Image (cartoon, rainbow over all chains, first blue to last red; front, side):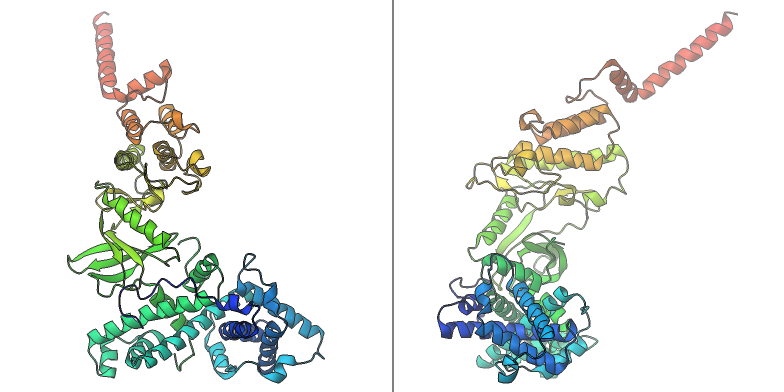
Length: 248
Length: 303
């Protein structure tokens, strides 16, 4: 975790995104890329199946596995053209097609469902479904976008926690979790957090600033991984940060 | 967050704010709140703890891979720094934040954009006086070789004590500096035809056109043919037929306010009579009253 000025914000343009890797001709690289995409997208896919398509917990789990099995085995991403649209839109279109086919053919071979390609923590995701009520299920695009935003942030938070632990800065993450992630109402003050952790208020300020700076860096890195071009990255970043395209 | 990996809507909202907010750690500024959002960045109200005053901090939303946006923001700050004028927001500081983003700090203008002042400033002369102050600030920038390129009522702030400030110099260009490349910048409805066509050399005349469009917003219905002619001349499709400078435009508006003949309008005897009447209304009525009284007395005495 870089402390100094310029530690975040600008990313090495040489790093290949997961999308590029997933379209690679090299099998290992392709599989690694696909697994990174699946990591970011399985929750939005699962939640769309539950809320938009009204699938049961079991069916949604099975279809999520099947969807990513098809993405990997049928090489669906080969048909994705970054110049024509966002990866997010492409995956959602593929998912809709899968569900429609599934409903037409109830006797399908449950490829993904039998093999459990992904480790899905559906219990946790069910808990999120119960608490996240801001998105109307009938607005599939908004729902998928909102869940994708949540998923990217969840990945970034997990990476921040791992990063802090690795560098012996678990206390930095602890302050961040108490202030920015905890849903307590009323919101905790810096003084309360300092008292709870037995540290000074200035430490809370400093730890929080450091954690947020790193959170920004990791979040944007995660996003960069999910996009191909600079233009797509900027567009998706504005969506992620909730920036109105009209500039309001 | 009730457990790691579980993010509520509230937590997502707080994370958005935390990731988006400029990191002012180690600087002299303390973040207060976001006050605006532009095409490439946002403006935040902050406290300058060293001087104990409010400042506005403009910061990029995202750095770009080739650094051209950062360069653009730094250039904007440098342009502002060369424009020391009461009608132009002064820049105090420029640099890079700990999170890597380029920023600059400027005077915080606690006011309202010009178009939101129209309900309060209803009289045509008062609106014209505001407009002239905009012209004067723009003319000063032109004198320093700077073309604003996005003049519109939203980019003019009126402060509580009546100060008029031209803001958002984000797409301004310095005459004779930098590569001239075709690019369309500005706001439809306010940008000149040559600017809309991407003419990289669009200069003073282009800003004069935008000022003319702004005048039309301030005065939706022309109260006189002379003022209409001023608007028409400022927004002539041919740059060569517009006012040669923002000062000339302001001077013609001033002549109109003073009841003098404006350069943009060749007046007939009817217009001239009306103008002279408006300008010398008191004298006209004094003379008329005198003549009427005298005429009445003569008529009475002559009986």
